[in-house]
Every structure is written in structure tokens, then in C-alpha cells.
Image 1 (spheres, one colour):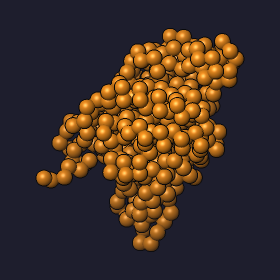
Image 2 (cartoon, helix red, strand yellow):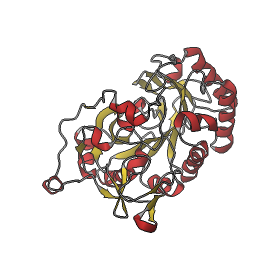
Image 3 (cartoon, one colour):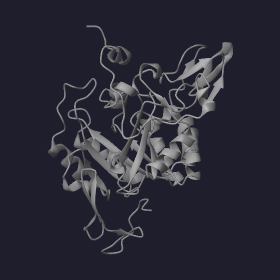
Image 4 (spheres, one colour):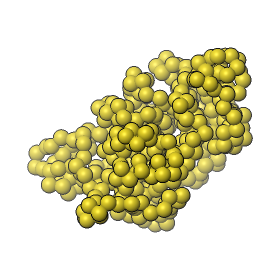
Length: 373
């Protein structure tokens, strides 16, 4: 049987797209007169012989001949210079609860202006947003928004945060960096929802301007990363350690997929690694898988499987463990590791009550890590 590539899958399947909650984006007269305002000189690459370039953004280190693109399909070699094709080229823009990212210890109960361009540097077989993450930039409708446009919209709609999400912000790192930098002038914070498959230098630079990062951690098994994600585990572990060293707030999500990464022993080993390398206070969210993209043959994750993962992580000593994609489950809420009382009462994305005052448990005074104001 013919192998269905990610590109062919997109061509034979309808491509979904929506700009919701926000009306048309404003574009300055100057930018409107530019033929390709979203094409900008890329960062993190070096020139090679015969007009080739080598990308140093992610661990793939793509060697790109003139006229070709990197693995992500959004960075192109034009006459020996490397360019991003998606600077401000938004394919999705929504206002979401910050809990949807999910970030549970970052300004709970607030909203985020959530944006994405096309492109990704991995190819997860279970991707929920494959129709934009695995598409070429020219295959999906888009609108241009400069960093100033985005900061203006965040203020206009009273969203204290911009979230770079849905696809993979690593591949539009230039835009993320500029938006996060300029956003500070507008009193707007920035968070990145990422797979963590990025080299140290660009991640370090992003940490200097971002306010929080959520890492979609796929598995603690290198073979899973190779076969299901088309990436590698070690660089993601290195990113997590770097985030801790940089002192930026970060959380982890682990999508639990039946038969592929739901083994309790694997989750136990991951929990021990987290405890040893990151400490007990990094929040980890075990979320329910729903059949998507190339894994429609698998069932949704049973609730009991998620509860087993939750118990394994808690028993290992991780303080803040959550269960996601099961609205109303008690493990959506945040509990004080000292007195056990509910600190943040959640139902789905709705926050019913917050019992944290000045970064401490309102009941016993225990310090609770996070960004609370």
C-alpha cells in the first residue's frame, strides 16, 4: 500500500481554518504596500558552499540548498540567504482561557490572545492541529499582523497575555521574539506552547523575553519520539533543564495515548527524572487523547488510565499533577501540598475560586510556585 505522507494527507483532506472572536486585523499602509510582509531574514543559520545554508534553530540542523526549504517548510533558502516565510502570517487567532493552554499556575482565570502560523518541526501522528501545523504557508488562508498589531489587539480585547500556540512557535521564533519584546511596552505578557525541540541558543534568547513556556512532552521513550513524533527525546529533556536554569515559569503536558505511551513504568521513570532534574514543583498535566490525524484507529484514553498516571506521578513526589480533557474531574483543581485544601477550583476551563493570596495558600501560608499577578 502506498505510504501517505503528511503533505499528501493534507492535499486529500479538507483544510480547516477559522479566525474567531477577532474581526479583521489592521495592517499599516506601509506594510500593505510590501508584496510579502511576512518574509523576513531568518535568525540562527550559517552559510555554506554553493549558496547552501545550514539552519541552527532546532536539532535537525537542516542543510538547505538554494531554492529549497527546511523540514518545517516555513524557512527558505533564497540565493544563499535564509528567510522565514511566516513572520506575522497568522493562520489562527482566538481568545482562549489561559487554562486551555493549559497553564494552571500562570494568571489563572485570565484570557490569552492565541495565535499561530503554519508549520512545525516535528510530525506527530496524533496532532490535533495537523491541518495548519503540517501545511505549507501558501496552502492555508492567513492574515498579516505586525508585533505592534498584536499588542494593540491584546490591549483592545483586554487579554493580558499573548499565547503562541496551536502549531509550533519554534518555527516562527523571530516573530515570537519580536512580539514578546514589543508586548512588554504595552504591558502584555507572552507565553509559548511548544514541543521543546529547539537548540539551546534560540531557546535561551526566547527565555529573555517570554513570561512562561508550556512543553508538550510526548513520551519518555526515545523510540516513541523517533517513530510517532519524528523527533528526538534528548533535546527536549535539555530544553526542560534549560528552562529551569533560566528561571522562567514552565509547565509540562503529557498526552496519554492508549498502548503507545501509557505504560505506568515509563511514567514512573519520567516522574523520577523530573524530580531529580527539575524538582517537585513543575506542574504536569496528563491529558486525554482523542483520535486525530493518523491515529484514528485508537480509542480515547480511559479515565482510569489517566488516574493511574496521576497516582504514579504523585507517589513519585511531584506536587502539582493534573488530569486534563475530562471536565469536572477533581484533578483539574490545584491543591495545597501542605494542607491539602483546594487552592484553585476548576471545572473545565472555568475557574470557580482562587484561594491563593500573595503567592501563598490562603489557609496555611504555604508558598505556591507560579505567576499569580
